Amino acid sequence: RGRSDSKNTADRSSVHKDGKGNVLVSVRIRPEVGTGDSKQELDWDINGKRSLVSYKGREGGDYYYDNVFDTQDNNARVYDAAAKRLVRRVMEGYHGTVFAYGMTGTGKTFSMQGTATNPGVIPLAITDIFSYIRETPHREFLLRVSYLEIYNEKIHDLLAGPVATGLNGQPAAQEEIKLREDSKRGVYATPLKEEIVQSPTQLLRVIARGDNARRVAGTQFNVRSSRSHAVVQIVVESRERVPGGVASLKESKRSAMVPGGVRVSTLSLIDLAGSEKAADNKERRTEGSHINKSLLTLGTVIARLSSDKDKSGSDKDKASKDKHLPYRDSKLTRLLQPALSGNSLVSILCTIQIGSSGSIAAAHSHTGETLNTLKFASRAKNNIVSHAKKVDESLGSGADAGSRALLDRYRMEIQ
Ligand code: ADP
Ligand code: MG
Image (cartoon, rainbow, N blue to C red; front, side):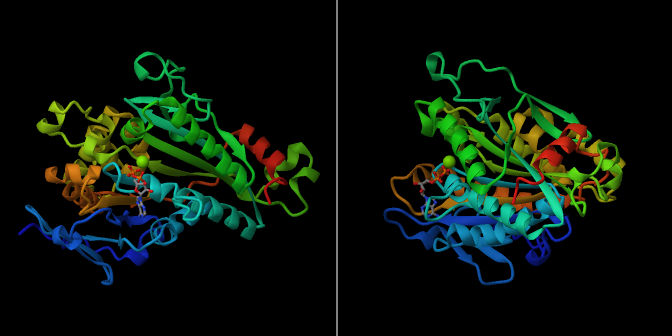
């Protein structure tokens, strides 16, 4: 009988409340297509305090998560339980990261993007962001969005126009986008287009443009999308609104009159490559699939976080711990480093599918993909510990003079 994750005692109601504690991990079970007795391989109980998934195959066992979404649950339910609170915290000044992990065809994109009648995490987050802005008249907001894709360890800017396809179906050369880090912005990609958006419709349109660029890039869209990581980042800047309006003040007095300074936080919404590419197994390699370095490194980092678990919590220990984790081995882990090392609220949505003949999931099930996903989710739950703090509000941190000027210009436009 496999191990039971009895250590995993986090009470889901407290997760994401104050930025501390384990990350929120949810498992979503995709409705089956075709035949098959779903409960033969897997059983689940979503009514208990901690949601349980029992895997009955070889090496099986009981796994506990914050949420298990049944085949009946729609995207709104998933969003409410797995992302809503995190999105609110981002509006209040925490960094937040939501990512979908699972093998191809299990519902990552369905969960993140959804459909017109069943909108996913991204559009629901956008609705909430603008509701929050409306409900918070004493602050003014500036929203910027970027959308990048990591494919074959290269970063593509999906808002820079269609990704041109060169010979052999490979993307043609774009200006190389690099990851940089500084104390103000954390890890960021540059040069990367960021668009200022002022309404939900406009934000959705920008993201749709990115999706389209992604689609145009590959004649084999399905292959590419199953091998690439799509990262939407929404940067939220805000500050106290000055009674009477900043515009009426003399330029020289502005900063002195602004009480709290500018707060800058980022919401990252990530649709990962299919996890079947992460399995480092010989059989797969002889099939000719590429091993996805980013996903493989993500698994390694998360697994190693535990053996290095920072017991003292001191910054010095954390810094030395971060040094020997292989964040820099891949673009994805480098980009996610702040989140994985605890500076961000994190919600991981793991998707699985069962009992479906003829699907990709069924084709891979003999290699234990479902079990791999359950284990990944369990390790993430136990190993990633958040000690996220609200971002510093001083004028010096985060926003520079340029973005303060933008906020001034922009303040009357978002309503
Ligand atoms: P992935 O992004 O993980 O490769 P998709 O999100 O593209 O998988 O899902 C594969 C197919 O299954 C799509 O046609 C999608 O509409 C459908 N699907 C996925 N999850 C669900 C769900 N929970 N309910 C209904 N259909 C789903
Ligand atoms: Mg997808």
